[in-house]
Image 1 (cartoon, rainbow, N blue to C red):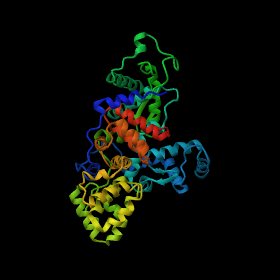
Image 2 (image 1 turned 135 degrees about the horizontal axis):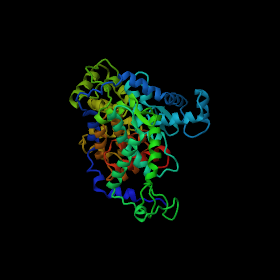
Image 3 (image 1 turned 135 degrees about the vertical axis):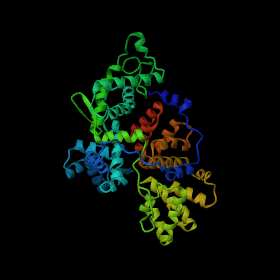
Image 4 (image 1 turned 60 degrees about the vertical axis):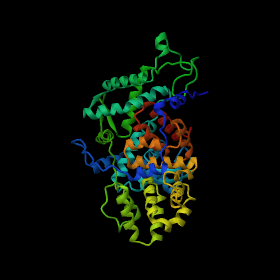
Length: 479
């Protein structure tokens, strides 16, 4: 029997409680419309041009892109060894193991989305060859999920694995600040220090260390608990496991192209150095601000409005709508909303609010589509006179959770990490464990990417650990 003690402790800890939920409609609108306009800092001197970084990202994910395109045409997931994987291996000239690795990377990088037993290409896959931002964001998503793409050794203590994963950002920061090779022993010292800090934060006193003994694996100390410790003991993970786990972490980061290993040293690749700098500066790779979009398609117009504040964006919507028949304009906006980019889905319904009553019939029909239903219900409630802050009351708990994940997906793709962390405030659930339980049940195709990004962005180690565990459960189907 597994212990629920860590989640209960997480729920009791006042620092981890979600604050009073805000209006979901307000949060969603701010998340997609209230963009920062500060100029982006320049990357460190010597950073390759953006096009070169994108080329490197495409090279790392080349096999994943091939498998994703094959699966999108075949419309079947390449999950476990079976006929689909055999067909993919034969068609692409790869081994079954290579197909499995590439498929996992395609999912983690957001190249594909799975809806039941059907595979659809993600927006990054469709824009892969022409949009450097899509390639870079896909690679950063893979970097954030490196521990899922490169599973830990089966005999590793789960708690020790979690601690090393939480220490990796410090390892990457040291590599980036060093601007050159760093000996692995120096990285190990950093990991030991970070792990000690994590245990001190948990007020963890190793019982076995005090007694001068260590419980035997699988012995009477009890079964493994959900956080990797054994029930009935406070023994911390074996510190002697850290060198092996650091090697595993460095190999995982090397496998996704973030660093290189050789001569007992680790060195960030140009791509890895750029990604760490991006995270340290908390900037995002986003679409460029627009000038005018009257003659452009609905998708290009909405992408151009990403960085506009709500007032100028509405003016842009009105100008675009005035240049074409209302029926055709509404149809184009709903087509964009049915796509895979959650940010554009939210903006499409913002534009439909400008249309008003002329769009009611089409929006009411769209309420029958699962991916559009929460947005359509909010639109209809506001159109019928509901206060925007009270409109979310028309959503069921499941619909509100689906919309929370969809908005978080927009922030993962186009937002900054602090916005993703603050997005927790809009959840209807009262605690993080309750939110994670319902997010796992929501069935949103971007659930894994959202949870991985939230775990990477959140400053609280305990909350990040719980979110990371939930992402692993969804990814492996063990939720």
